[in-house]
Length: 251
Image (tube, rainbow, N blue to C red; front, side, top):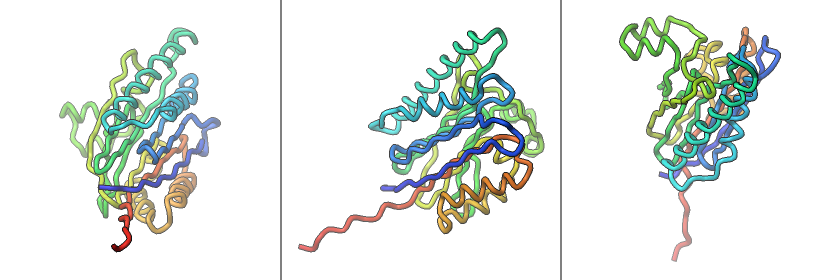
């Protein structure tokens, strides 16, 4: 299946933060999109997120989706070690880290790699679903069966249990999913989904085909900034459309 990808991205410091510690990346030509959220309150969160985007932005196109996933994972593991080394030079107890969510797509297959609570959503028709699962204590309890889905949704925490630069050894979760024409994907930091609920996100994304991705991204940001916007806000929208069929000359 031949698909044409288009994307738009926006990042903003929000209404209350002095610095923007988020970073975004869109490379539709190779099917790679990224959102990284530097850990607020920690030293050099912006360095961490920008290091992730710089490393993934420098990757060469891969021959297969599997090879691309491997190269993205290897780059993130390398950044993890670089950030850990830099943190030790800054003093005992220093943490320099960032969440990350990366989406890759080739043909009808998509892959998400992530650490932390930045998310990937998919809107297909009227169905809006979260593909990633946050790495936080509540989600860990949900995975263990200690709490229910309803209890997990009601809980709210800014604590994350995984991040690039956060632990000596980085463990990335992976999700493989199918891609269909007219799918719209949203990668975002928690600064967006903590301000806008699923209904608001769905409503805006549903108009992406009509309004255009750039306009939709700006509308989502404006809606967020119209509220408290207590954190940095970052999002990437990627949409898959069917490639037009080539027509040959009649013989």
